[in-house]
Image (cartoon, rainbow, N blue to C red; front, top):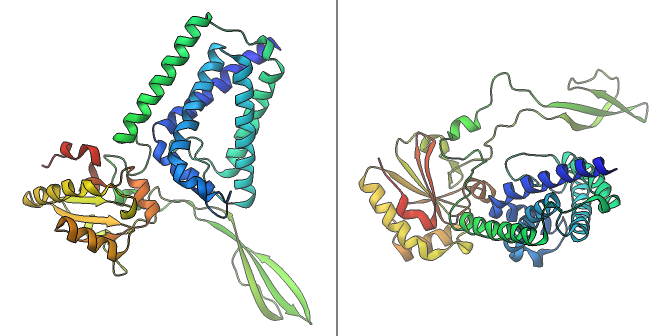
Length: 365
């Protein structure tokens, strides 16, 4: 039992630290995932949505600290109970998401490792088994160091997590796992290879034959039946290839200008997914950036999911000399974790991406 507890201790501790650090690198992204869970139709807790960011920071720091405390064997009773309660809650959450198909990605490892709901549930079940082993054999968990050293390690870990969270919140994630990272080409991210797997469907054809329903299953071909066709039910049995970047558009009045704009040699995108939630004061700096960029031959555009009324009001207030285009809010949130933010592109390749606190760091070739 002693060795089984040690193996479980290492597995659980390391996984919690890795999972927590990945999400701590991007707490804003994890808060978006929590908003999905809190929304109506999932957990139906809309009153928690304004607290999503604060909750995300708290949860991921606790996750990292519990992993560290487990590995050093500090406060084992508190640590094991906390791990058990956390994994029971997340196991329920991932099962609920998987069974009812509410949230298609749990966000367990942020954007670094994408897991389907059922994969997430399976992962949580395995972790639950390891944590139950720790719970049963908690008497075998001994501290690696004396109490003073353990307190110091715990305190330093907490301070380091808080400082790191503060840094990424006021700038951008230190490591960008998304398909819109610097150096990525958006057109390439949207392309589908010729040999990419195609989705497979199963068709349930229903006919009236001699007054009775008859259902015939095929993989797509229309069955030859001597009867009256009623309807067909289509089920996807195998997903096809999905490019890393999808649902990306740059629209005005229903026309998508993405293909045209992504061919620009010098393009500056001002991104604000929701103007009602933007740090509006920073648009004074945006106006200055736009003027400087245009003087150096850049085309400047705004991208938002807000209404025309909101964008026109913003343009008037800050005398912005560029047009806004519509892009899906979720896509804009994925592109950059700042509202507003600025991207610099060269023929669809992202050259720079800056948080509103770092507008002074923009460089133009």
